[in-house]
Image (cartoon, rainbow, N blue to C red; front, side):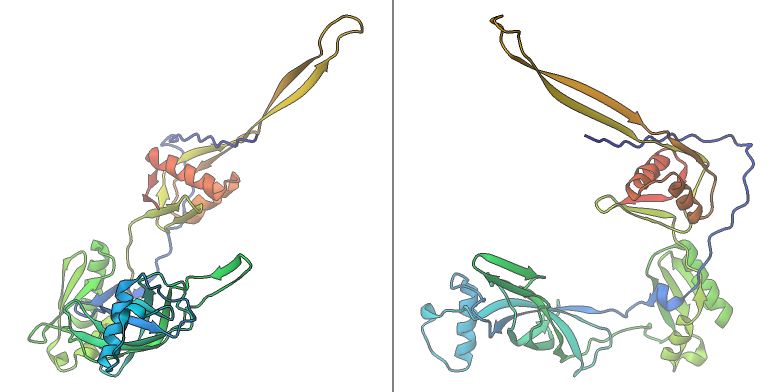
Length: 373
């Protein structure tokens, strides 16, 4: 039996120790359109209920009553009269159809749709979606979907053995829906005099930098209302060219600021450290302890004619081997590469680094938000 333990020794060093100067993290600029969006420009979710036909016996069973009822209602609309109790819907399946209607989509545009089984169908492979209205939350129909389904997988089996790749009860239809109605978008106020920028990640510093960049280009026309909102007055000569003004604003470069964060996924051993993570001086010791326990069986045989009994005895041996710990000092660092290089110097694995970072955070030496997934 082998047991590996990682021992961490964390101590804040003396304040008078001289440290080499370290370079600050590289600041990367981005366009405003990559860190913020114009408020009012948004997509809308659509939902519909439909039927898939053309399945090779892998559809819903006759136990799914709503599938049989849907088939009956569809056939009645075509003037077909029959006994619903005798219907065998194994080549059909009831499905839910979902889609995202992008902003400024016009009637006649095609959008992708996703189809998912509702009943006990085994596979939707090879099926065709019948005409399905797609509604928004207000109950209005904004698109209609129809077409051949692509599941992106397969299933094969014979003699009790089977193989399957991906999920066969859900699939996509690229450009499978046609937009029937446009969703109006309000990107300015009623007077076309103001637009509002909504930050993708609310941050006081980033909002202020966006406001400063726009003011430097167009004059004092912005107000950072809160960490997630910047209100921009449209210059008078742009009132009839809102699109041109927004395009000019979106192309401006800013340096977004983010909070220092370390993200840990303990299930996969993944560690992601932000570039602005810093630490105080700490010492880290890592050592390995190996414990081996062995058992041997010995047989004690009595002498001849002694009338003794043969006895089996078990002897246990224990060996302990401790590797020398590697002790290094992590200096107060302004670069994430220094932290990673120092941890690699002691031969720390990703899971060891997770334990080390958690211990450094507990000691108060890690200046970052530690997020565990």
